Length: 363
Image (tube, rainbow, N blue to C red; front, top):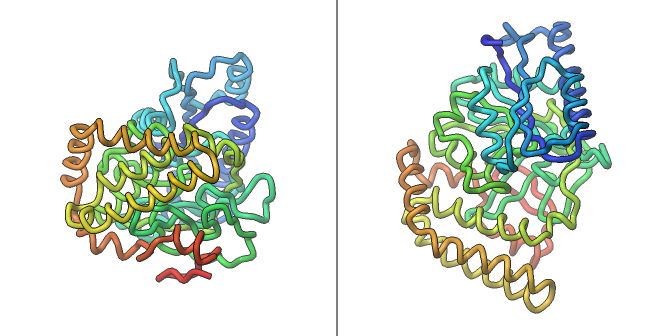
């Protein structure tokens, strides 16, 4: 399939039934495209869809039974769990498509999802770096899903949030985010991009392993001068992690470590000097709150994240050099796409639960 237009890369780890649903929804998208139900510019060759499954160490017989039912899919078998970030990179290197659609195995696509993404990117193919569809919950299909919701945003201190989701508050989809808008990051649960852009910015950072890797990727996309958009006409339904898993020790450690690492990599020295002290203060407050009022093990995970950063200066320096080599635009231009304030203070102290518009208005 050397002339594939889209390579769909599924990162699989456990739960083969979820993978089956994802694959079946991809087949529906392929059928929809081949039928030519909605002809549009940029669709030439749209019947060429490649499916790649990156199996992160799952060797169950049931996995082989599922893949036998999808002979069109290419399976890459990793001997161990390489993590989401490196799993994506393995799939990207194997892909032959002009465009890539990276998916979690617990995502179900609406039948016309890929078609809408192709239509949108055809309008400005040289300026778009990443696209994100509307991400709804598979538990409750009228509600947004935590991982990306209606498009990823970030504040200047590095705290991510999304249209339709601020921290633990997730909104119902009532049409409030039905217009395509520029966003800061696209969720790794369902991320659409030109392959050439991902190769240019260095793909995903494998040291992140999991969590925040798509935000770090988006930051480097912005440094190159590309734009990231939310496309509400394209819809996916995501199961996502349960609340307990999102509060696990490993989740806490990776989230805090990777988020701080992302700032150290991608901000200029001047921005770091201005913002990092305040961010460290916020981290300290979070750690103290966990220690005295919530879970002391969570506080230990945050402290472990700081220890990693303090003991890996050479690796961080190398990452900064690579990010600096990518830079085509200034921090001031990138920061125009951020929320100029602390979303954490707005949410936890001032009770703001929703975000609307750009520039962002909190309510």
